[in-house]
View 1 (tube, rainbow, N blue to C red):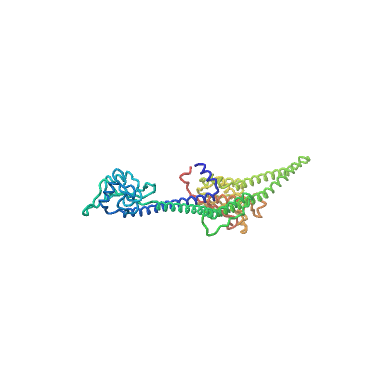
View 2: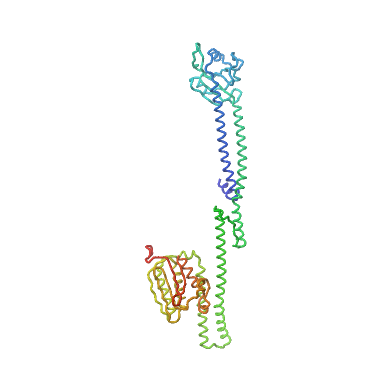
Length: 484
């Protein structure tokens, strides 16, 4: 049984569907055929029983009954009164002896149930059964009490005797056998037709699956993510939904690959500049050592400071790339309740160290959010670093956190309106800021972190000059009960 189940599961889906359809139809046809056969059998036997009951004589002459029971004829020629009845007629004694009566062609074999009727005759009872005659032919038998017509019109039941009437079953059984063969033939045709129809339906129904399979195999073979499966717009069945999901998946993968390639290209471009500069400075130092021509102390100090700054810039760029390359699943595992105001305070301390000549005012009110702590702090630091970078020497930066809205305003040159749509793009840098250190990834990381926390970030020009960065995060002024 387990082997058959294993073999069935190994068959193609189309073959399994065809077999299941054929099996279901076979079961239904078999059930209908068997039910039909039994109904017809019941009808035919009911007609036979009615014929037998209608053939019972109201009463038999006493002289004929007495003569038949006394002489007990065993063949038609032994019965002195000639043939009067059609079918099988005989009398049966309580000891089981059968006596031919009424021109019956032969005797029907007597059973114990017939003897019991003869021993205890009841005019209102009768027993129906199948039997055989002495030649072995099947018959339908009715055994009932023997009613005798005595003198002066008096009627009564003969003691210790019963009347047996029978009709041949050959015609009935032949009809049932022919019906069985016909139903068997129809069932076979129905099962074969159901199998063919199931195969056709399976082919038609699985055609979209075949297309989907071909598309998946094509993608696996060629890595071509531009392939699409045609789907009817008004179709909403499982296959259509699967096709739409596949198309959405390939579109997302193609977009992800394009973004990945763009990130690699942009990262290569951004890395080339500090690496080239770093290599040039190191070559100068190496050539100085090899030729024995020392570099003036002031130039050497500036050269080493440049190498250090370039290495710092390179490390920051690599860190930003790592931050952007982290998957959503890695971020989701670290999400927790964060005290946003404490994160802002920590970022302010770092910003004051990087811009000691600046005045940074802060009005920070408590606010708790759900985010990744390190990513959120990095985003706030990037916003403050951006303000520090573009603030004039001795300038002021205003920081306010109120009801989940963090605003950071600097008094720098501001951002032209035509550049505002691009400030959150990866590696985008304003033409006026390309001389300043940075990778162009800071605000992109801010936008991604804030969006993953369910918030919004925007950058706009401020009245009187400068820029205002606004970060909105959902949360509450008090920590949730489950916060440790």
